[in-house]
Length: 239
Image 1 (spheres, rainbow, N blue to C red):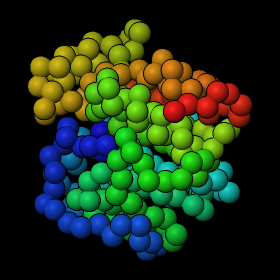
Image 2 (image 1 turned 120 degrees about the horizontal axis):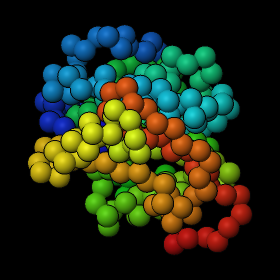
Image 3 (image 1 turned 90 degrees about the vertical axis):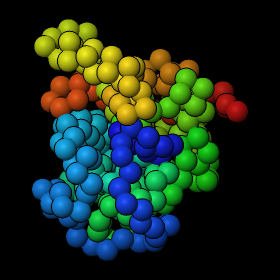
């Protein structure tokens, strides 16, 4: 569950300062090396990996595109991205938690980590070609969600793509009762399990001015939906 706005659904590790905006060194860490990550986080990280991989396949970033991972956390999206055969030259990971960013580990040259809040990003308008928000949006309140999506739309260039990953309840199948149970747990113990709250953001994305392209379910790990959307080339400007 990402934390560009926050990461309240997961225990914070011991506090370390991340270098704001510094370039990270070269080799991506072994994804099996969990010793550097807080145990409560490690125990569930594998439940996110399949959906993150699905989202990156939907997004299919090109080598000449500028990508930002909003709600980087400890860097699962960045690690998977670094292992792909086609890797964007410009990548930025943003999270509200300096402690989480300090756990990301080494990444390819030129990739950046920055502290930031999805509700008020400090990046210029239309500064990115592709965005990914993985396990972030379900952490936001109904008031915060439209503001966050408005910020994502603002920093995305016209014609740029956004992919989101959120826990969600499938329409049918064996994963549906599991997803319902997780959603009820998130409702009963929101302080601890808010990150498991089911959210299909499709309608909210449309209200924020995005056009939906396609969606795909990931049922390995947390039942999740990946939604790919585009900021239209032409359309009414939004506040």
